[in-house]
Image 1: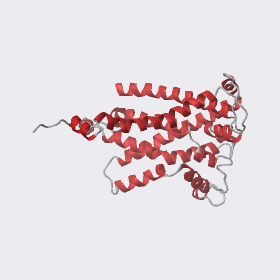
Image 2 (image 1 turned 45 degrees about the vertical axis):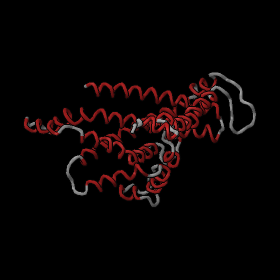
Image 3 (image 1 turned 60 degrees about the horizontal axis):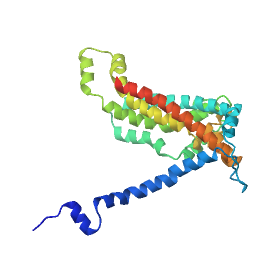
Image 4 (image 1 turned 90 degrees about the horizontal axis):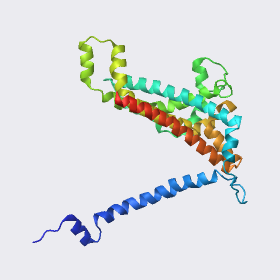
Length: 296
């Protein structure tokens, strides 16, 4: 009896391996084109027009006028300055808190699995819910933060100097578990024999940390920083809910107002691409340092 190879048997049933592969790949490619590629191209074309989604009037081609107007607007640069400050505070806090928690959890402790799960809960919550939750915590009348810190009726979100820090604290609370999770993965991959050799040589904890732990975890820590920096630039949900001061108007909030409250669709598209270019440039710098860390 003659045996048929798998391709021949599949062809006999009406579907070859190539057909089955295309059956899964083509819908995925179509989905990406419709929901990813097409909006990017359409919004890029819109950025060079004076289009307003609130009117039925035809849009006019204005070239680089939208970009020139945005780049010459001091308020836009103010939004960038506020966002840069927010990103630095937020990402730095997440790295220190997340990596610190990972160091504490990277040892045998009771109920380690339960503690890790509880620490991951903030990351799983909706940003809008987190914003509303922390708005109640910051409330000067019945918020528990002022009660525990003994600050009386201090208004965190109404104070121009503290409002941005208050929003950044929320982001740190929510996303430090993400850094913790990646850091735990990096710490668990550090070879144990290096610590044993350091112990034999009577190396102190600071030497062990700065010469073994940190260099080996640095690449995955840099990956966490890259992801969190990109996401911090796009922060909107909880920042919009908590924002009560001009000092907390991040880029994403200004972009939202420009697009959906002022209906400057063409201008907002240009603004979005300026933000994209800035984020890509910063990410490339991070990737450069990531490659250096990996080469060590």
